[in-house]
Length: 223
Image (tube, rainbow, N blue to C red):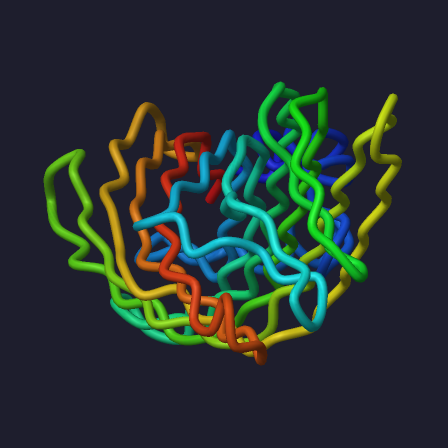
């Protein structure tokens, strides 16, 4: 087993930037009963239930949602065979370009049809317990309840020719991830993981309010 861990250390030191050094990881997996430390990295997609719109302040809003593709990375410290604490980070990006009607009001309202672009970013920083139903098969279901905060940003631009508009917003909001998934063991040290979370983000504005997001992830678990 020590030789196997030495082969894994260089790779883990690259993919796990959040929580621990590769040497600490190697020291944490000495038990044959269950791994003390597990690391997940993979692709992730963020979807939204309903439009909701994005507010850029008083009487300034656009249709859209905080969805997109990205990645998820997590570190799990197992304290029991079926219980651990997870630190989780995910990032999702979306760039939408389209052409449609835009209305701007000062003393009077003007509506024109022209090109526009909406960019959104969602970064989740979460932690909480993970429970695993470890068994003698290759299939290990798990559930988790994570809490923390999400940093979100949105930028709306339209370059004219009639209306030239630039709107930006950045928020740090309470967020959660409630869900679970399945690990499928490929070898003693590697499993494939698929998961799905309800990922609400609690915005503090009248247009958005709570945003009900759903996060899907697929990747590799090292243990």
